Each structure stands twice: as C-alpha cells, then as structure tokens.
Length: 453
Ligand SMILES: Cc1cc2nc3c(=O)[nH]c(=O)nc-3n(C[C@H](O)[C@H](O)[C@H](O)COP(=O)(O)OP(=O)(O)OC[C@H]3O[C@@H](n4cnc5c(N)ncnc54)[C@H](O)[C@@H]3O)c2cc1C
Image (tube, rainbow, N blue to C red):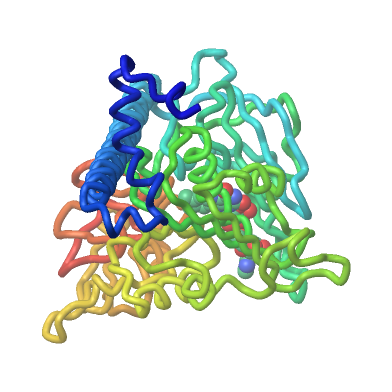
C-alpha cells in the first residue's frame, strides 16, 4: 500500500515523503533513537516558521497597502470636496447681487408653536447663488401702516444643496405673557402672521461671518437653543449633504415637543455615523418619552458636553439666547477650550464678552473709557462713559436719529460715516461696512469721535 503511494519516479512526492517522515514517527521511539528523524523534524519546523513569517509579512503588507489606499482615497475625497466648496463659494460670489432683490414666498410651512418656515424663490427666475452654511438674509419689510421699511435679518435654515429656494425659519416674537400691553415683534409678526404664499419680499444677498468652513475637516460641535437652531442646523445639513466624514456633534435644546423646531430635518441627521445628534428637552411633557421624543432631559450645559464628548478638542459653534451663549462660552473657557475655537451668533445685542477682549488694567476697555462723541449733523455732543453699550444708544439718548435694524451689526442699517476718530467692535460684525463708516449699533469709540449724524 505504502509503496503504491510513494512512487519513486515522482520526485516531488519523494521529497514530501522525506519531509513527512519525522511526523510519521513523531510519537514513536524513532525520534529519540534516530537523529536523522530529529533533523528532519527541525527542518520541517523551520520551513513552517519561514512560511508562517512570509505569510504574516505578506498579510501585513496587504493591510498596510490597503490602509494607505484608503487614506489616499480619503485625502482625494477631501481635496475634491474642498475644491467643490471653493468653487461653490466662487460661484456664489459671482451670482450674488447688490441691494434688494424681489423674492416670492413660494411656501409657508408651520413648524411648531409660532414658528414658520418661508421658502423664498427669486421673482426674476434667475439662478440663486450658494452661500456659506450659517449665513443670513437681510429683509427690507414694507409693513402696511409703517412709513419706513423695517429691516430684519434671518439665518438661512437649510444648506444650499437645494438650489432653487432659500429657506428661513422664523419665530413669532409674541407679547410677553406677563405684559400683554407690550406689542409683539414687528418683523416676526408680519412674516409669521401676515405674509402669504405669493407675496414679494425685498431680500439682500446672503452674508455674515458666522459660518462653517466646509473645506476644513476639524471636528465640530454645533449647538442651537430654540430658534437659534437655524444657522447650526444649516451647518449640520451642509456636512450631511457634502458626504463629508467630518466628526460633528449636533445639540439642540428646547422646552418640549411643542417647541421642537424642524424635527424632521434633525431626524434625517441621525443615521449618519459621523454626526451625533442630541436633543435636550428642558421641561418634557408628561407624554414625552426619553429615547423616542428627545435624548436628554434638562438644559444644554457645559457639564453635558463634558459628559458626552470624548475631549474638548473641537471647534464649537453656537446660537441661542444671550444667557445660554454666555453660560456655554464661560463653561467652555473654564474647560480649557481656546477662545479662538468658540464661535457664536447673537440674534440681538451681544451678550458674551470674550476673554480675549480683556485689556491690561492700565488701559481701560473702549466701552468704559471716557470720550467725547460729537454728532456733527445734529450739532450735539455727548460724553461716552460706558453707561450705554454702543454708539446707537448714545445717539438715541441725545435724540439724534440714526436708522436701526437688527441691533447686532448684521444688517448695516445703522451705518454712519466717521468724520474724526476711531470706532471699534467687541466682535467682528456680520455686515461689512465701507471704509470710513461704522456700525453704530455695535460700535464703541476709542477716544474722541465725530460722527456724521
Ligand atoms: C444675524 C441674525 C440672524 C437671525 N436669524 C433668525 C432666525 O433664523 N429666526 C428668527 O426667528 N429670528 C432670527 N433673528 C432675529 C430677528 O432678526 C428679529 O430680531 C426677531 O424676529 C425679532 O424681530 P421683531 O421685529 O419681530 O421684534 P421687535 O419689534 O424688534 O421686538 C423685539 C421684542 O421686543 C418686544 N417689544 C416691542 N416693543 C417693546 C417695548 N416698547 N418695550 C419692551 N419690549 C418691547 C417685542 O414684544 C419683542 O418680543 C436673527 C437676527 C440676526 C441678527
């Protein structure tokens, strides 16, 4: 039988037989009594080790190569995305417009209590420029019964992946419950209660410096409180639409389901692996269930960020009420987040004072240093002593008339020429004012100043 298997004229079988020989007698006396057998076994072990090492190294090389390929692929994807983002921004610049352009309200959608989304399409039917996620539109509202246009800013609430409309999501500023005598907000009342599908609105091109740079890949934390969700949701939507694998956290806080703005948009983000969604209800309703309607009970606080984020190594972008942003900002600074990695947008007068604005004790901050402000056209002079927060308020106290819009340095309505002196801002305003002018609603004098008002 054996002879039939080991045919001598098959030289390779012969070799195998010789190699296998030690195995055949491995457990027998032969191994000890036969040194040749031992050598055979050693050779076999050597060959096995050599082969194993060769295979392991080939597998290692294979995985290293495929890892390298994946990295190269990701780098290429990133380059393509960055180039696309740059191209879009360049296109946006080309197709933009000056002054007001007429837009038609194409759809008006109820979102939740007092909050509506307006879908705006250009009345001239021409293409829409793209925009940077986080930017806003300035509207010049012709409100019946008002002699002057009311100027208001609203953040774009969806990214520009959809090309033929702009979406705004607007909260109706009702009269305070405890002070029904106070009139509701002028602009938001008009847009949420009066404006209808088919109405034409005056719209300035998208602008603002609070945006997410899509060419970057640094991890980001996006935080929105109440209607402050609009710019940060646009940022999250833009990450999703670009197919970027950038790590992002999206936090949204509201009171409960009745104030859960743009729920469907938020839910669409959940399946994305790189985008973590956390919805906080500060006061959930009795029927609302954690895990189904919301993720966390309570306010969005720096402690919640510390609990959920693996580190503080993110860029933080937020929008919400003044107290919310102040708390978050101070908490992030205390957590060791560098000031330049914290970005925010106020929908009204600024509430956050950056640590980087702190001045040495010997030089008073411009907002508290005494100065004389002259309003040249009205022939009035006032002392700046830090008791008001900006030049617009100083002018108003002297009955000097200056146009007013957003109160946040975003719309440009309050711009006046500076004849003498220098005006500074606590934070770079969203509106780019022309050289020689200043935005009085956010500007403070540095030394004596003469304004053309
Ligand atoms: C860059 C930017 C982006 C923005 N994005 C959005 C957005 O996406 N969505 C959004 O909803 N808003 C947004 N806003 C806010 C928006 O521009 C308006 O400020 C907001 O709609 C309120 O304007 P209003 O004209 O309705 O209220 P205003 O008429 O300015 O009144 C504001 C508040 O003051 C109260 N008030 C009125 N008169 C008195 C009085 N005599 N005494 C005391 N209180 C009084 C009103 O009841 C109201 O609550 C944004 C603002 C900026 C600067």
